[in-house]
Image 1: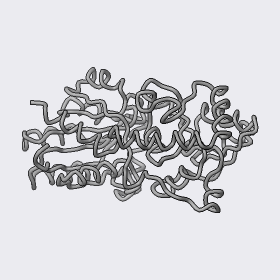
Image 2: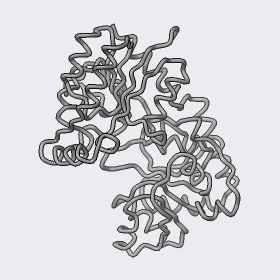
Image 3: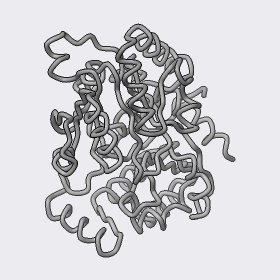
Image 4: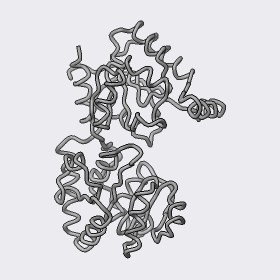
Length: 348
């Protein structure tokens, strides 16, 4: 790509989130990026948040008049090559039509890391607006067909990515490492299958520590022997926790139909050992037993946990190779988005 692009970037710009990481990656690539923060409630007001929750429950509808007005105002006041909308549940079809009419040269690009076929990750506005996007980027390979069937003219599958400025090896002092990590751990919200797998390890004598929401509930329900350290952590603390575990578990979210997730690349990018659920997409990202390890059931999970806790040098060698694969194969946000922009701009 020869010349920098002017991009109007719409999404949650919380600095801890992956949406903001993508914005930073576009800026690092040399593009001129104007950000618009999308918030359902929060800074936009308590009343708006309550109305949106009620609207989603009753009508699958999300509305943010301020955001839509801000998009239209920005497009009227400047020239943009791309209007980038990250998970734009509240962006109205009318706004997209106004952008098309006023600035026909602006490519409207959507991005979503979640399963947009589930009600919690969609809205009436989003579904009605899909045919107005020039391209939609998804981390779900199965969405390519599904989004086309919903009227989206071009869908691009982009595997998950990591943020190099965040996800990197960190040396953690021994005392802090003991507080944050341990032999085996997981960071993320609890779900039934995850909780059962963690409880199974703990019942078989494996010290397991988890960080995330709802784990206390499952620990009580299963009479689990695992340790609940606290809520999910983000940014540098998230990375410090990853680097404090000997074995990082990588569970996939069944509600999202995940075949890979952000952890799938964030953990290896931190040069930490990853033991993940075996899927074809995981096997495409990392070589089994060389750059990461995988399991298909609780029995195999336990077997591999026991083996790698007893073989630290092999574990460390795999962790180093996993990071090297991230660097060599271009799993960073910048590398992923560069390919996406090329695919989008090739569209006549």
